Amino acid sequence: MSLLNERGLAGTTLAAIGQHAGYSRGLVTHRFGTKAGLFAYVHDTVAAEWIARVKSSVGDNIGVAALRQAIEALHGFIRDEPDDIRAMYLLRYASIDPSAEYRANVAKVHRAQHRHVQVWIEAGQAHGDIDKSIDANLAAELFCAALDGLLYRWLVTPTIPIDSLHERLHDIVQQSLAIRSRNAQL
Image 1 (cartoon, one colour):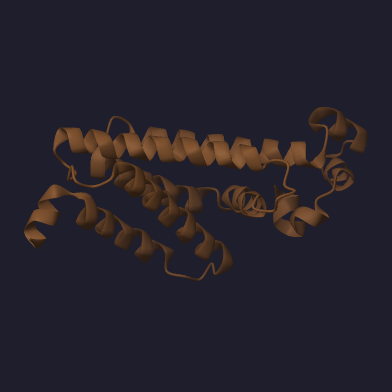
Image 2 (image 1 turned 90 degrees about the vertical axis):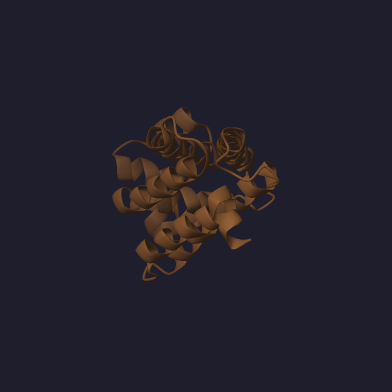
């Protein structure tokens, strides 16, 4: 991950990885097969850590409370593991290249994230905390996109007011999904 963050995808070669880790390129190749195999492993490892962090933070919460906890998990991940998240998102954004061999790995994680968020929203609707007229699928997609966009902007411009933006995102989720907030606006 440190090589990805220092040198980017092109500069992170199997030989450089072996040298950085104190192993031969052959051992790295034997373990991961290709550079794409290594990138998939790095992405999947950090994504699994991210998903575990979100699940732990969300716990049994549903609806808006679950989404708020997911936002908090993201904020904590940025604070606690900035290099990990930077490497994962470097790989994620590079996966839009049609030749990216690990693209399916990124898409799989995106689908899992969307599925979790949609379940939280639907559970909130069933419990009466989220307006039932809201399309849970679209709301989940928009929520995931907002988190990805916030991360992207922070990665490109680390000086943005990330703490304030996370707080504002809490407010926006509450205002746009919660029944009490929507009824008060009517």
